[in-house]
Image 1: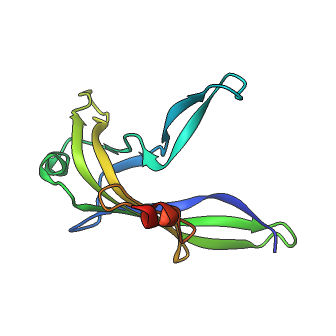
Image 2: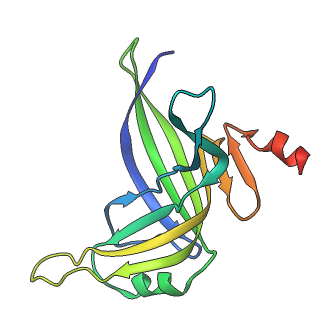
Length: 171
């Protein structure tokens, strides 16, 4: 089957206690950028960035709220709590045009990083923004693990495969 990924049909955001109501239209997901060092020297034409496998820079998720309310401040005191995003994604089968559905689940653990109180304007949303430093993230599609990164417990798996297995054996 030839499926063409189409879009996120809808999503929900949950904290450890309840479904979050008041999120605006999007959540800015973390950017996973590996830390690197510069490799240069004899036998190398110039320089290249050498990736440190499993090591990533700061990974931040941003939650923009429609209005400033208690949950915005709750996020300042939580630490190590879970944040779960569940989405229904759609794909199109290129052979027959049928639409299929895929479940996406992103689980994160975090520490509070900041709160942008937003703006006050008559008849408008405040667009308050919580910034959370993510130290654990797991991405699953239809129950299949695509990524698990746990910075504090030395776990880095892609498509269920431990990317650090050989390194762990050496330590």
